[in-house]
Image (cartoon, rainbow over all chains, first blue to last red):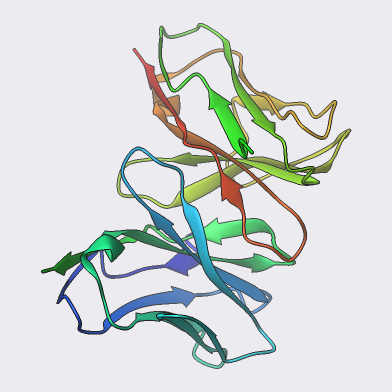
Length: 111
Length: 111
């Protein structure tokens, strides 16, 4: 059972524009959500998180939005830069252990 | 500060062989995790540990064993390697409420 889904395997945007990566989850008990970024041949790197008591969290160019009723979260990157090109994983879970990961979305930012 | 160190980076095993994937962290994190990533899939949790002497099964524990005798080390043991265990393995660590710090991964091929 895939409790965390990223339905878009890839996304391509122009440099300077907004990138929006989406993630859906099925388990209503999940209360902690994270986004990770992964470059080839490296481990994932933590990017930004949000807990279920919030609906938005910002960190510089990165903003995560959480819609609990829809069981949906999204990551916005504004403005997108070529160095943002990577695979982005959404993760969800309870109390930050036993986190479940989505399959990832490959973002390509074109100069 | 090395973070999370995984060894080896690459390994080819024959069916039925055994091996141990090593993971060490120097951040004094209580939580440690082992994930595997198959092509086109998200990370699947194999085992995790909330502290020395305590381990728990994740989503896909069959065919693996772990131990946590110290805070720093969390080795993953494969006893009878099977082709289905061909994957990239990631070790991670965290403190409660923080994102995970991942190692750079071990690429394992079972032939």
